[in-house]
Length: 193
Image 1 (cartoon, rainbow, N blue to C red):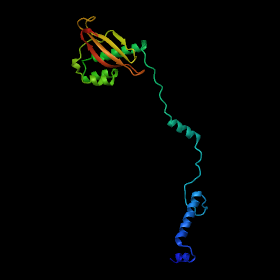
Image 2 (cartoon, rainbow, N blue to C red):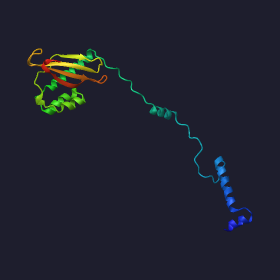
Image 3 (spheres, rainbow, N blue to C red):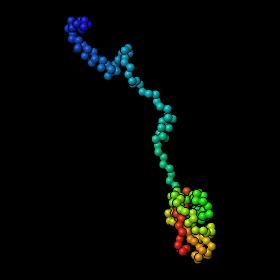
Image 4 (cartoon, one colour):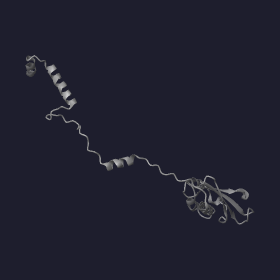
């Protein structure tokens, strides 16, 4: 209180003097003219050291999205047809093995089937599978897309389409240049495909 009274005696009100000091301090801080002594700790205005150029290159690579080169559409050729026939024959041979337990039957089929076909055949009663010999000649019907093929196979003890002969139709699919897989096995009535 004495100090305030001393300031009043000189004719300058205390409130105005404090306001003038605050305005001066604010002006000095805004223009960056603080004397080195008593300078409040402030964020450095110096620019950071330049980044390592290898770090910049890595950063740019991390942000760049590279699209995989699309695979060409598959086409039917002699090699592709041979693979499709091999898969169809193996799948049908495993399908006709009704003399094994359900689990073993499905495990024998699974490598040749799509996931959806495995699930669908998982509920089939093995006892309902007709007995038959392994498939003879398999006729492959190409689809224009290159992603699908249809295999027609005859099995049994008969000849041609006569009694004792069963005809099966297998739908094969593939993804790009991936392997052929059987998506459906159907028995044809009276040998008709």
